[in-house]
Length: 517
Image 1 (tube, one colour):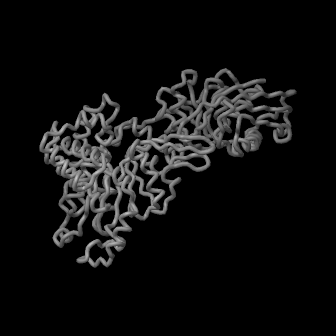
Image 2 (tube, rainbow, N blue to C red; image 1 turned 180 degrees about the vertical axis):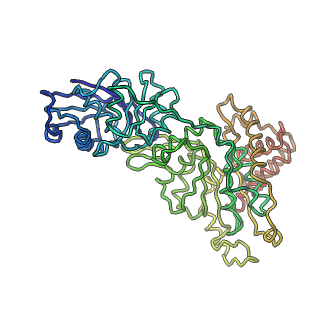
Image 3 (tube, helix red, strand yellow; image 1 turned 90 degrees about the horizontal axis):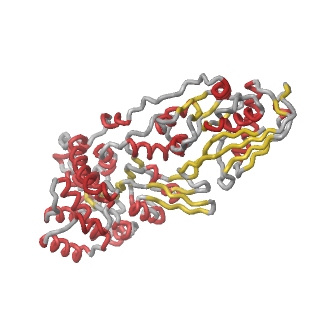
C-alpha cells in the first residue's frame, strides 16, 4: 500500500521540500521480530550514506516500540530525485510513512504534515540541524498545516513559523499517537524579538582609555556600515575596541534575527535556543583557511563571513593572514554575498558584515624608534605590502592608534558609554533608512555610483579639497567613492542634509593608503 508524507533537506542554507513516498508490498502483518521480516527496504532518490543507514535505525526503533513486522518488500522514494538527500533527519518521516503503508497508522493527515527527526535505536527522537530554515520554507506552503519536530528543536521551529502548528515529539510513539488519536498539544513559543532592545552588554566603550580618534572612527563605521582598519602597537586597545563595536550597532530587527538564526541552525550552532537576538561577532584566527573563511568544502557549508552576517567580522593581526585568504574577501566586501561553485553544485551565501581589522605598524609591533623599534625600512614595507591595494581600497576607514600617555594610562577611563554612542548611531541610521528605503538599502556603505551622485553632491570648496586628496594620496576611483560614503555618514551623524568641507576633511583623514602602499 502506498503512503506519502513531507520532509525537507538543506543545501547550503536553502531548504528544499522533499516528498517521501513509501510502497509497502506485504502478505500481512505478523508478530515476528521486525529485524527478520523487514530485511528488504530499498531507499531511492539520491540518498547519501546517512540516509541509507536509516533502514537499520528504523528497524530497531520499530522493535523497541512494539510495532509489527512487514513480510514483503518496502520501497522508499525521496522526491525530487535529482536533489541529493543528506543526514538522518528523514528517519522519523520514513518510519511513519512505513507504518501508514502497513495500516498501523492513520494516513488521513500524513500527506499534510511535515516531519523531521532522527531516530535512536530505542525509538527516541534526536534533534537535527537546519530546522529553522526548513520551518521558514514549509510555512510558505499552503498544503502543510502541521509540523512534527524533535522536542529539542521546538523553539526554533515555532519562532520561524508562527502560522504553522508545531508538534514536538520525544519518541516515535508520540508521533504515532498524533496521527492515531490527535491528542498531542501544539507548542507555542514565548520568544519576544524585542528582548534584544533591552539587553545590557557586560562590556562598554567607556571601559577603553584614551584613543578618542579610534572611537570616533568606529562610531562613523557603525553609523554607516563601513569597514575599518586599526593600525597601532600591541597594547593600544585595538582588540578591546573591536570587541565593543557590537555594543554601538543598532539592535537587530526580527527579520535580521531570523536570517542569522537560519545560518546558525544549518550548522548546528543554534544550540536549540531561541532566535539569535544579538549581532554576531566572529574573530577567526589568522591561521584560518580560505574555505573556512568564505565557506565551501565537499558539501558546501557557510564560512566565517556568513556567520558574521549582519554583524562584525574581526580580523586581528591582519597581515598575518595568508594572502589567498584575504583576497577572497574582495567579492563579499563589495557585494554583500559570496558565490561558491564546486563540482557538486553552487551556492550563494549572504555576507553583509562589518569588517574590523587590526594590525601592527611593523613586524616588531613597536612602530617607532622611540618605542624601541629596530625594523628596517624594507622590512616595514614588506610587512605592510602583505595587504594588497585593492583590498585596502575596500576598507573605508584607516585609523592609527598611538601609545597611551602617562595620564591616560594611570587615570580611570572617562569616555562616553556605548549607550550614548549607540543613540547617535541609531539616529544616523534612521536618516539613512528614510533616504534609501525606496532603493532597497539601509546604510551609506551600500551606495552605488549612481546613488553617490544623487546623495553626495559637493560644493566648490569641498570638491577642491577632494581633488587635492586624490593627487597627494594617489587615490583610486574606488577609494574616492569610499571617501564620499564616509563623508555622507559624517554629515548624517551631524544631522546635516549637505556634505560640508569639514565632513570631507574628516573623511580624508581616515585614508591611510599613503602610509601602507
